[in-house]
Length: 468
Image (cartoon, rainbow, N blue to C red; front, top):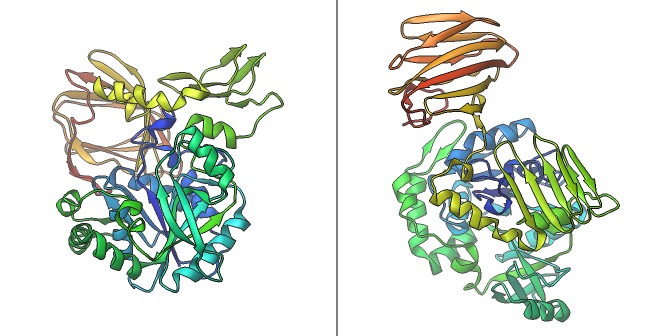
């Protein structure tokens, strides 16, 4: 069995912590591991499991590779989507990359929480048995509340000896009264978005019901650029692929769909209130993370990333502080944070996409000050890492080494700088920065010029495969 981990989400409902360039699957929201790492870790102990295939946005590729490396895992393939096209094309690309149509695929989202690992493994064993006989299996979450934020699956008769049920219908998100009826009826499950089927069976059904999607995916697969670390789909073919979910494209149409009930403490952590539900709480029902003090406060989720947050007399509230934003909302209205993200995008503000600290394949930078014609950054370069050979049309840069050793290429010169030494990069000068040492290189960069945007970079060489 090959785990296929879908890691293309943007997680806007968990803004300001989750942003499009650093979404929730890469964050340690519930444990010390990120959600992607937890998804991989909970598979340990499953028999005959191969290395995973991860499907992700091209912009997230280095985060995926690094977080898997931290766990000692090398992916069978990291498939890069130039644009999001929903789950049906993403899984089709994974099925085409699997190598054999007989391979079973365990399709998982990278950002779910499952607390009962033993129950999860038992359900996977049931699903694998049914999938081995040509079934397309989905997991139906046994509901614990009348949830209006999930789609539902209505089960039919018993399908076989594996404890599977025929799928009678997929049901859209209901209103509250309808959801209460689903909970009382015992025949409805939350739609988890997790699946097991053979690569060949899925492709057969996709060809039967959405041949246009399969044709575009085959073209994108055949024209893919394969490197030791990543598989870049043929860009235009994938952009031209119609967008659709597995449910709409295949599962709602096929007569081979079955559902395995799953009661394993599942959550998709789709909002701040959902995160509060799965988080550890104190005796007053509060989940407090970071530097937080509270007085007469109950049933709140409060998280501080940098500053002291003090709460007095709050109830059923969410307060999240990051280095560049503070979000405050009643738990009952946290879904509306998406409207804030939409306002940020409409205003062209970077807070919808980026944190102040931005991760790169070589390390990260933190924008600590920004003015009309200057910007100051704290830069950390990992041992052995190197920034691209580049130049800027509109800004000059001053570099001061705070810790470690820097190898600086400046035009035709190569300089070796140590702690407390500095250099100046004039406008239009080609330059690069490398850490030849064994400890992280820490620097302060001061930019000056008429334009300081990140798109003022002309790259000439880059070991990480980035291009303009």
